[in-house]
Image (cartoon, rainbow, N blue to C red; front, side, top):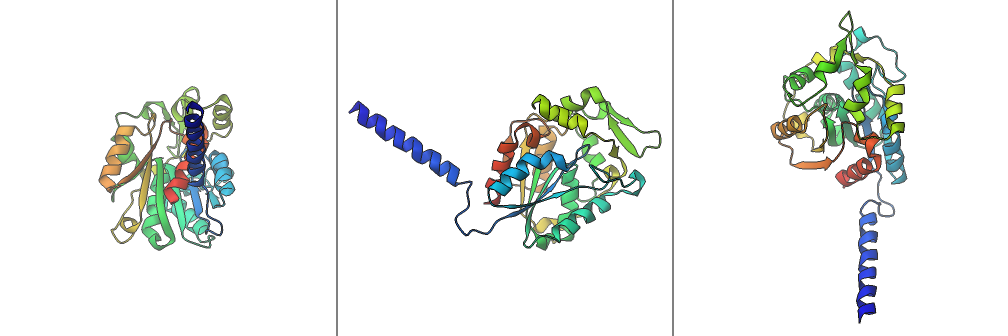
Length: 270
C-alpha cells in the first residue's frame, strides 16, 4: 500500500510539473506574440538580452528599442525629449506584423504611456515593470519628487549645463541591482552613461480614447529603492490597473532574475 501511495504521489508530481511547463509553451500552430521592450534611464538594450532569448525560445517575436541618447545612439542630449523617445518606439512598432505587447521599465513607463496615447490600436497590452506610470499632465519629475521612499534623488549629480544627470558611481549597482550577481553588476557599470535630463520634465497628455483604451498590467518590483513599492501602488491605483503581478527583486529584475521576468511576460500575454 505504501509503495502504491508513493507511486501515485510521484505521478501527480510529474503531471503538475508538466502542466506548469505547458502553461508557458504555445500550442502547435499558435500565433506568436510580438513583444516590444523599452529600457529605462541609465540603461540600454543590453538589459533585455536574457529575457529576449527566453521569449524567442518560447516561439515569440521580440523587438528591443534603443532609445535615442542611450546605448550605441549618440544623439546629443539637447535634442532629446519624451516625444523623440515616443516616436522611436512608434517606428519600431511599425515594423511588427501584428499588434504588440509593449513593455516599459522605469523611465520607459513614461515612454510606453505616451506611445499608447498615440497608437492605441497597435497595442495589445501595456506592461509596466517597476515603471513610472503617469496620469495626464504629469512628468517623470512630478512622480519622482512625490516618492519619499526613493533613494535615487540625493545620489543624482546634474551636469553644469543641466542637460544630463549622473548617478554617483559607488551607488549605481546598489540602486539598480543590489540583489544581482557580480557579473550583472559589472554589466551595469560597463554600460553606464549619463542620462539625458530634458525628457524627465516632459508632461504627458492622455485621453480615455487613447491611453485609456489599452489593457494594462503592472509588475511590481518589491525590493525597489529607485521607484518605491509605495509609489508603485499609488500609480497602479490612480490608473485603475487590476492585473498586478510581483517580482521580489530590486529595480532591475531582468538582470537579477531574468527567467522570472520572462515567465511573467509570457503569463501576462495569455
